[in-house]
Image 1 (tube, one colour):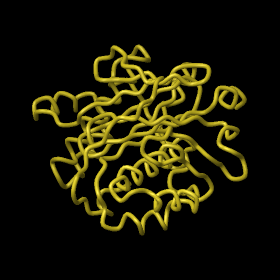
Image 2 (tube, rainbow, N blue to C red):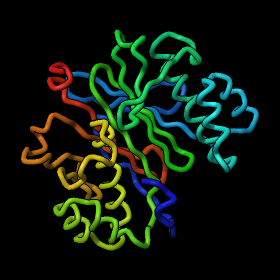
Image 3 (spheres, helix red, strand yellow):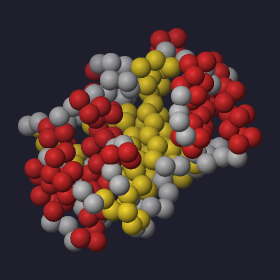
Length: 263
């Protein structure tokens, strides 16, 4: 969700969902291993607020195209977030592929989903990235498509109108039934879960958002409830939610093992 489209008002503190299969793992940055059917998906969260000297050092591993893109940002904050976020991605991919960060080559799908270039195809590493303010989240999987999304939880003046427009009928009914104090978290639970799913599909916001339902009530497990006419448990995708930092909520969606193997 673009922050330029909405006005942030009062922040509220969020509590990380109780998800038993999210475990802390030892990485160079804070991370989690999320256990799914048939394997483990790695989720890593990082802060994007770095000292100027560190930003300059991280920029050294970017490609010429990435440096040019960074130079086009009007605000130093946005330029810094892009440089740090892309450099961290390169370092995280490099550590998993056994190559230098500057050797990573990225390509983009028809809807701009990033992927490794064909030169790395034998390793079959899939990944996805999301950031909100100064928090970035990266998700990695072997052989299965994956999507991740993160948002700062906050009150939006037009949240009810956005929910009516972008949520499915079932989701909008569940959202409107929430206690007013729970609505900001419920709203961003829904948004991050829907965004993670369409990013896993690779369709972005071109995918009709009313074709699937997700859970959103605070305290309830993150689930895909329906995709078209199929119940969520038969849709071929699995979802988990987590909180990478105080006042942030995130979701990750990955292909089921049998679906990834059948492609």
